[in-house]
Amino acid sequence: MKSKIIALSKNEEFKELLKKKKVSNRYVTIFFGNLSNKNNKKLNISFVTKKKIGNAVKRNKIKRRLRSIMNDATKKISIKLDYSYLVIAKPTMLLNEFRNIKKILFQEFKKIK
Figure (cartoon, rainbow, N blue to C red):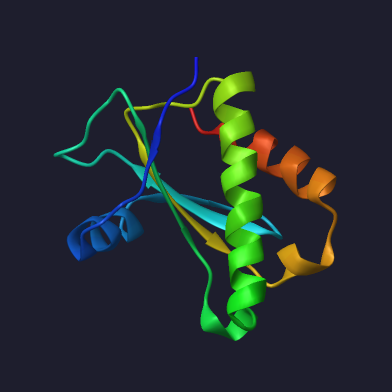
């Protein structure tokens, strides 16, 4: 089942998610929780990379990697669609292989249940 990925759009949604639960590893920090006005049939997730990480090219590379991982994750593992997710990338994502990052993120999303 391919679910469409929808990004968080309102500042209030980001602030509300930052107060919810979080899971952290060496590549990303994932904030997750229920948001009130959310469509439960679609994956509500946003990817954030800070300016400290590097220039726009590096930040966009990280976001492309994360989007690709999440597209695979929606097909291969069951992700709770009633949660909203905020994924904040860390600088170590640039230095490591895509395979390693994907494996660890799959483990993190399996924990969130």
